[in-house]
Amino acid sequence: MIDHRGDNERALAIYEHDLFARSQPMAQLSARNLSRFFGSDAPTSVVDLFRTA
Image (cartoon, rainbow, N blue to C red; front, side, top):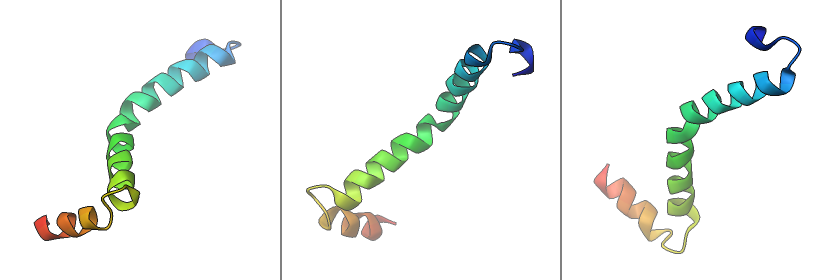
C-alpha cells in the first residue's frame, strides 16, 4: 500500500493479485475435498481416501 499512496484501489488490486496467486493451491485442494466429501461419490470417495492414507 505504501507504494500506491492515494490510490487505494490500485494498492488493493495488487495485494489481491498476489494473495490469489499464493492461495490458489489451497483453494484447489479445498475444492477437491469439498467434492470428495459432499459430491455424488460420497461417502465412497471418503472411504477410498482413508484406505490409501
